[in-house]
Amino acid sequence: MSIIIPANSAISGGFDVANSVMFEQADDPYFQKTPTGNGNQRTFTFSVWLKMDLHDSGDTHKIFDTGSGTNYFTIYFTTEPFLVVKGRVSSSNVLELIPNMGFRDPTAWFHLYVAVDTTQGTAANRCKIYINGSQVTSFGTATYPNQNTDFEIQDASYPFRLGADKSLGDEHYDGYMAEYMFVDGAAQAISDFGEFDEDTPTVWKPKNIASINVNPSDANGNGFYLNFKDASNLGNDVGVNAGTDFAANNLSSTDQSIDTCTNNFSTLNPLDVSRLANTDNTFSQGNLKITDGSNSYLAAQSTFAVTTGKWYWEVKIDATTSNTASGVGVADLDGYTRDDGAANSAFGWIYAPDGDKRNGGTSSSYGDTYAANDIIGIALDMDNLAIYFSKNGTFQASGDPTSGSSKTNAAFTNLTGTVAAHVYDGSSGQAHEFSCNFGSPFYAISSGNADGNGYGNFEYAVPSGYFALNTKNLAEHG
Image (cartoon, rainbow, N blue to C red):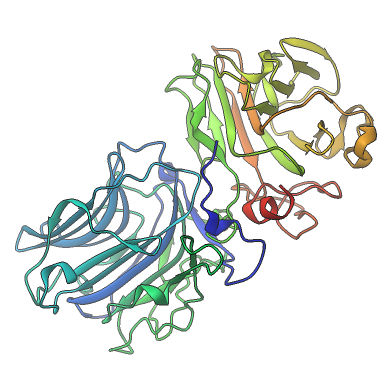
């Protein structure tokens, strides 16, 4: 089950971040621009919000990289995964900080802040790292630069790369980024980027940073601010006194997301899979798509689970068979053992490709068959313990999700427990693919429908009274 940082759970109030960008590692995505001239190589600040996929933690995932092959400045995540901030000068690691903390949660957003100021007299003040507003003070590796060290950064000979290494090797970022800012010439205060919630003082939340001068000492410097609001130009630099835009490479308008650090949307959970599934299963597209191999099973749940409220999401069928043990639906996380998919469990409720519905290993006739390119809508009513399924916008068996306690033609009325979205393939030997849309899809939507609170982007109309699975809706209705 997910770990939701409370900062993402406010119903309203404070600053709202509208957009993020989703990096799919397999697409080799990155942003790049070349500095217009040498900026300040001693004093600068990074701030970015991240939600990392983390299902491929053995790789290196670059947040920022610039410089030559021997001298450079870089920020990345590596095996565990651990955060690494490193600067090389004269072929030596003069800066290397690796905090004693892992980043293992693919369900939550967090804030990363790195400030460098080598003019400081105290070594430990020459590079500071904060995670969610708290300074990191425990390091597995801690090497600080000499006073007044100049890093190989903001050099017109070497481009900035965000989300990839400087040589474009296999070190692409995988996940979401929001509110990415670099300040040239100032160690900007952490309090400029966020604040602790007055009602929950351990919760860190973002501030509006649009007015921060990203080039305070040079109007033609290399500072930048990317808010990813322009889907046609994701590299649009909107910072005060900013320079040229970034080129977006292998990123398109569909990579713009409304899953942000102020409204966290559900995804599939790569940490919660069936024991029958193996490494042939692949999570991708911001953990919204799952593909099984030809010799494996597939079973996965959503990062958010609910006990009350009414919820809607869609699953696009990319590839499947008519196997009745496969399908989409929900699983009760309190009882589902993950020894098998929920289709064979008393704690799972499934609509199968052959048109049957399935619970406890028993199938019965229900609705139309479905296949690749069909979109299955799921309306989950936990207030009345009922679930309804639609195919391409039509609810099956004349089901009425708005019927309330009468549960008119619901697919199932015996739901119980803590329920999460579920996708399942119970037949090995054939590949299956499911793409989930919990309101922030990675694929193009032709119509566009939001819930009653204005959240989400769905292919078909959301039933009245049902809501997308995001933290603002959960705070109000869950």
